[in-house]
Image (cartoon, rainbow, N blue to C red):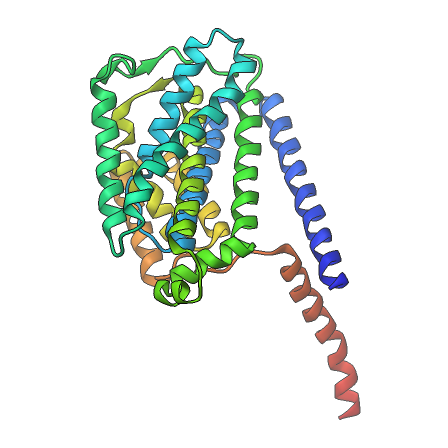
Length: 341
């Protein structure tokens, strides 16, 4: 028990050191101008997509429920955060973090409203209801005065300036890390194991005394909260909330990230979100062939890896180090065994 505890501590320290190292390296590259504003924006969008994919993975991968309206929660969070920043009268450095939390809470509230009736039902009802929710939110946003209708909400300030491109990156990076950490901790906790048991066999889980409605709702609200925070980050990164950008296609795009990485794998969601953010930009030079190549890449991965890139497994530095150590140890022992033979 003590050995496991010590191993976990070492793992946490190593991962924390890597996170800090990555942040320092990216910050230095941005400040030195090696990473210009264009690439900085791509990195920030990558962080937003990682938050969206990892949060959706909580419901679709861990819980096994299909959600087709995740972009709706992002839109709710974006409006809540954007409206607060515009009308609170607080200085932006103070208003911004409060707006992000508010965006997450409002999205979580909508998660409760949608989740309570939908998650009591079995089958694909959640997919249909969330699909309807996403479209309803978009239509309402297109017709309300407070959201500025179809013109969208604009004039939302960013923390970035011409001389400082790292302010938004700092928030994006650490919120993405926090989302990954909470999702991983939740997945390996007692609550996470209860959620996984529902995915494997809901009837058996219910017969074992697990409150399936409670745990389904818990995972759903957590996912909606992070999607709302991602919406707040997006609103301040772009400076404009256009409801047409949060349609059904956006929800499918996030779902593809989860499926491609492997449903149930946080590491897979991170990798696929990163690749699917960079790939369209990398193929932009191919003009009209860009989307065709993008689709071919997706089809190839699905043909050769039907369970996604990582399936349900997670990348672990400690396990990788153990494998390397075991391989090296095995090679050293081989000559001795040959001599004995």
